[in-house]
Image (cartoon, rainbow, N blue to C red; front, side, top):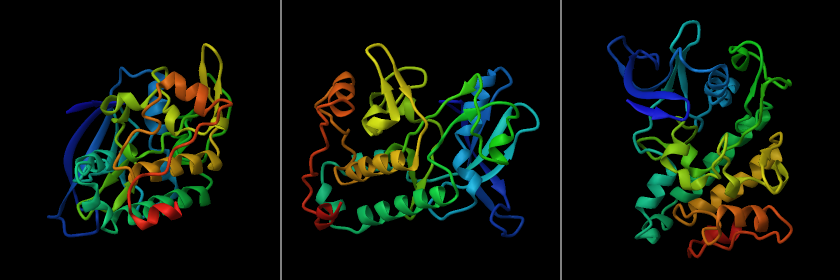
Length: 271
């Protein structure tokens, strides 16, 4: 059992999830939100699974089931044995050519783009959090309302992509990113991944950083940064800059941009 951004996390097994015989067991990840959680935490927990509203896709993490009628709230998600893409890339950093001379990086870029297009085709951005009224709202209709718990957030990055046993990419996560990779976030409430966010998606002042409504165009910016991550073996974007320097130089008027990955892979020139 481990703690996630919203609740607890446990690995388990469930029967007959894939229309097989009753004796078939499937490995799953169980996400648990206890009764002690605040209303805001419940909204965040459920909105974290918002991308699953649009039906199944081969490169979006599967949501096998949910229990929302009683506490604790439960989400049953697909288990990916190879872990998150960022962690996998970092294991290859000492010998990147061994990875870049395969087709996996290009396949991951295609698979991620396909998953994101599927979300956009279904009028969903990755992901948008919004909260008001029923906690079941996310699983029925999109929410675009004002209220005490209304906010927007996007975190498209390699750390939020999982790899199945055959190394197929699955867009989705288990709510572990801010605790596993705290260096990727400008710490606040919520923590904001400023290195992956488009300048127009944030409102930055001298004292605060606030998220604006996330658009498909903002997702495409984050997709570009994620593709850059893939072809740098999981390097942190703008690693030479502090978070505050990213805010002032990347999101601000200097308009600093990512440099070309040094990989000799021919596909880098087509990024």
